[in-house]
Amino acid sequence: MDAPVHGSLLLPARLADLACTPGAVSPAVRRANLASTICCKGGYTENIRPPEAITRKDEAANAASYAYKGSLKDAEYDHLISLQLGGDPNDYRNLWVEPADPAHKPGSGG
Image 1 (cartoon, rainbow, N blue to C red):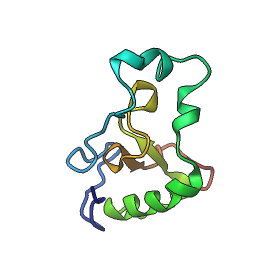
Image 2 (cartoon, one colour):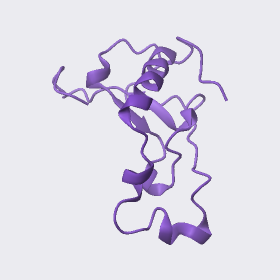
Image 3 (cartoon, rainbow, N blue to C red):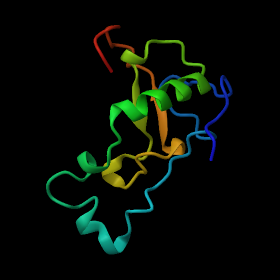
């Protein structure tokens, strides 16, 4: 699937546009393997989270889709369905640029 086109989404206050970021569950997480995936001891998400070098380009494209104008340093490229609950780590339907909290100080990170 292709990511949404530039400027095609509206960025609400702090919520993903569910038409474009509906969420996606990982096909690797199934009822039969919960003990070795999301319920494993030792950090499941650390093993499946894509490296920043890969997500940086995707984040910029996603921000453009949402017409996000702020600094990406102050936003969080976030999963709508968390990885801890079985959200897909790489599917664009589960990723969106979450704007910084209104109380966030610009330049201090996401």
